Length: 128
Figure 1 (spheres, rainbow, N blue to C red):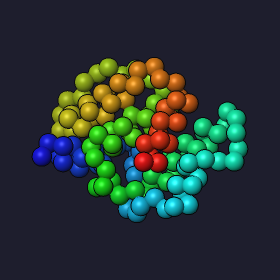
Figure 2 (figure 1 turned 120 degrees about the vertical axis):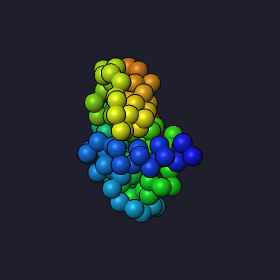
Figure 3 (figure 1 turned 30 degrees about the vertical axis):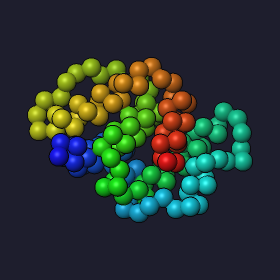
C-alpha cells in the first residue's frame, strides 16, 4: 500500500522537466525502441543522442505501469545525466516529504557517477 501511495505521489511530484518526460499515456513504440537501442552514429555524441531518444520515448510510457522503484530510478538517472551529482543534502518537510525525500535519496545514491554513465543507464532502464 505504501508503494502504491509513493507511486501515485512520485508521478505528481516530479520536477517540471521530468513531468514533460512522463506526460503522455501510451506505450513506447517499436520504432522508438529501435532508436533507443542504437544509432548508426558512433563516438562521444552517441550517448547523448541515445539519451535524448530515450527521454523522448519515455514520454509515451504510462506511469501507472511502472513500479515506484523504476520511477525513482528513472528520475535519479535523469537528474544525474542532466544536472550531475546531487549536492543537496537537506531533508524535505511537509506534505510531499515522503516523495521528495525518496526522489532526492534515489538521486543522491548515484554518488559521483559521471553524466555519460547516467545517460547510458537511463537508456538501459527505458529500453527494458
